[in-house]
Image (cartoon, rainbow, N blue to C red):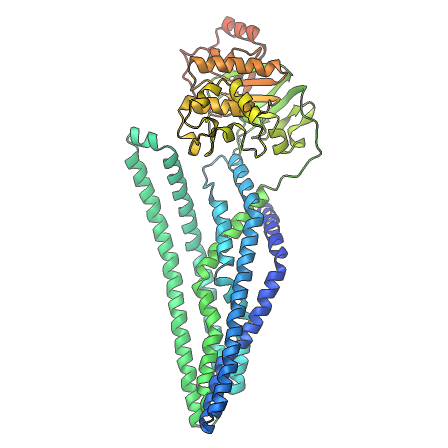
Length: 585
């Protein structure tokens, strides 16, 4: 790992550690309870010692009853403490999840934008769940019990030095096995996690494109790829499980061998007169108790490794996507948008998609961005709405650069319709109102009317309360696009950027789009449309032409188009020459 990556991971780990620090009282309580529990664990051995060495020789029933009652109370107290310790650790896991769930969700979404390669987007939430599950399980209890192993070894040594040495050797052997499990288990667990992430990517992409797979005969090839990925995952999991199972079995066997060996050694010491008969049973129980945390830790080692890997991944994510700060509040933008010498590359690459783009739009302007596929149109759209940061140059709203705004604050003044329309499971009204809890129904209806979709919505089974399903599955492509258009103009944002807004619209929808663009400009907003067809430029007054990521022309719509036609330059404004589709950039 590079020094920079280590610094990033350290910052992310400090954020996670900060959550655990807040639970330090719970950990301290668990530690104290573990100390008392392990002291109370001596009850069984001491009881057996007293029964064999005192009660049986004296044949005193009263002593047996009294001692049994005391031991019963101590065992009940021990059980109560174990319940409290388990709940404390469970609360720590819940507190971690509660504190970091929204932060992790936010970082997961923003990291998806910043990564160009396919990745298992849901992994951060699974990592958080893995950490919470481990903290709430039996593993941490075993780790809290491990430091008290020397106590049992010392008690055995007090019975007889040879018993203490035997217990010490057994504990050392099992610790070696635990360290061996750590050394050998990391790689299989890491491979299994990688294959699991790859399988999740295949399954999610297949689920989202089920119609394409079935209609074009792609289901069988994708099923084969799924099967191959699953086989790799299963083999990696088998190696990890086999290793953990083998070491756990060896640990259990060694514990039983050691327990029996101590029993035999105790019997020998009794025979030669160096120990009392009660020592035989007491020492055997003590050794079993001393080694139990090691056995439990080995059994939970797979979960421990998985939780540690999840911790590292989550720490890296939180460091790469730091929490947004709250910049000084600025007034809502109302004047102009200025792009100055903007150059950018898609996240995760060093290849520039835009080179030195510059233009200025005043309130009430309408800009059409045209160019061949791959010319950088969609890249520019993403930069304008703050999704992709520029590498050089700047984008300013009323003179303030985008980074002077928080994404949430700026988002209220921006409307965006991406090329691939995505709606969310919920009602039509929730999707239009951007899921704001305090959304004004009148503003929602106004946005729908402005987008020309109000009548369509009222014809749905439950009107604005109609559940549209995941990704708007219950709606047609044109309905989804028009509802997404209403979402983009909800709240009368200052800047509205529409990427191929007419791709799924009929004639009525295109007419509504044109009226929407005119309405945005009339209220002194700025409308920007990425387009392939001339019909989508209706209602706009300026045009920007891009070619290979460079600015070819910018100015009034009629002048730019007339100049292009005069030069006989083939551009996407001729639909018969160019297919519809999104920018490769």
